[in-house]
Length: 159
Image 1 (cartoon, one colour):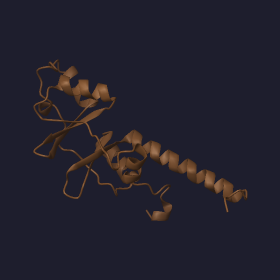
Image 2 (tube, rainbow, N blue to C red):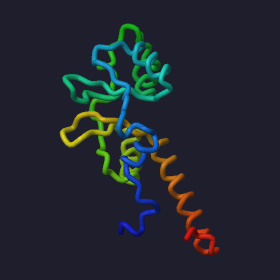
Image 3 (cartoon, rainbow, N blue to C red):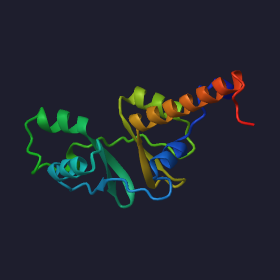
């Protein structure tokens, strides 16, 4: 698709800037041996749906609400006795700050996931974006563009 055909040319870094985490990120992380119960407790406290599992400064996996439902609740596992590494998603798709949001949304749709860790040029975790973050950013950018176009057409465009 031609860049001019993109509804809004918005990138991951725009989302991070809007969230206020572009410079000072505080991604929720856990060690692989952390109990599922502890991970869920920390996720609830932060009101987030995922926690990135880090081992030796690299992403080892991601644990989400969906992982809990499918691999703990439905299998009658004990969250206090189950380590997050036993049930996390290991093959984690990532993006970088320059990735376009339409690419992120396509990837999340294809993978049926709602969170993508953001990594730097050497693959280190820097932040995380969610489907909600992407949709909110695209919606706000589209609204702003519509207002600018309406003002231009009606002659109310700032001089």
